Length: 107
Image: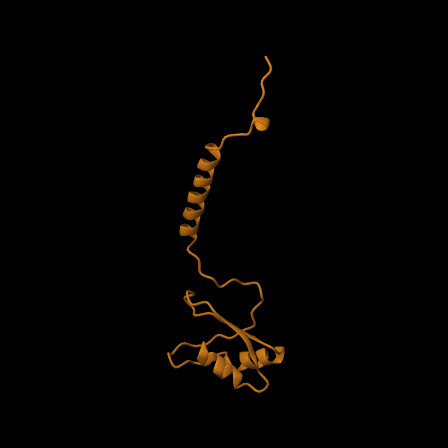
């Protein structure tokens, strides 16, 4: 991140506003936000196709502002959600209703 920040700052007129690193993403995705849009254009031109010291080729493009690069463990999240729902259901079943909410049956 620091290395990319330093390289981005070398671009004439570029000021990095924010860098977001998706460390769990297998492709090593990061988003760099600049204060000026033309700096982003210059950065894409500078970095796209460049081979880093670790041998990985950089694919630089404009972020659409929507794509979520967060890697999630969907199966684990579903199990946790089911567990929370079951616990909430158990809690609901063990509640005492106030008298005004109880069903009144006329004989």
